[in-house]
Image 1 (cartoon, rainbow, N blue to C red):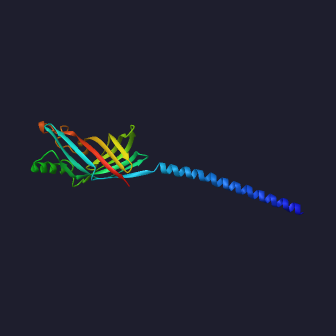
Image 2 (image 1 turned 45 degrees about the vertical axis):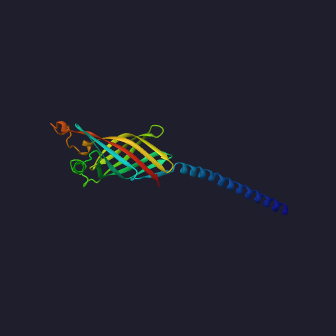
Length: 220
């Protein structure tokens, strides 16, 4: 009888040992995917870079038959999202009320053109104080080169645009540069356009204008 009890005790101890070993093995097995998952999350972390509007700038150039005019528009805000040093999404906003003219040095002439650009003939800044760009497509071309597709809204009218851009990420700082050509008539800016008015002669203004954009952004 005692022999049977001893045998049963040994059997119980063996069962407990097997269960304990299995439990430890399961715990260790479960720990591996969690660690791997944590590493994946860390590797795929998306960092938001907030546009520094003081150090970012936009230069515009508009041409007419008799010459050209240049100026600036302030970039008021924006965010660029980066994953593993690669751009993933972003948007920025322009303050159309801040438009300036830089090529006319005469104060009276400068004020006249600036006021005209802010009027309904051009950007109608009182009704549309901002212009917006939202990235909808990103195609890397190696290194820091991309081709960006997005939606540009001016005067409440949105059109798709595409342009090349250079984007560099250095730790907590991002810089981006792009040159964009815009057809103003697509945004109901038709003043002195040969496509809408006849017999303009040398008073015609070309439909395309150029934007030279430099963005500086800091990681948040």
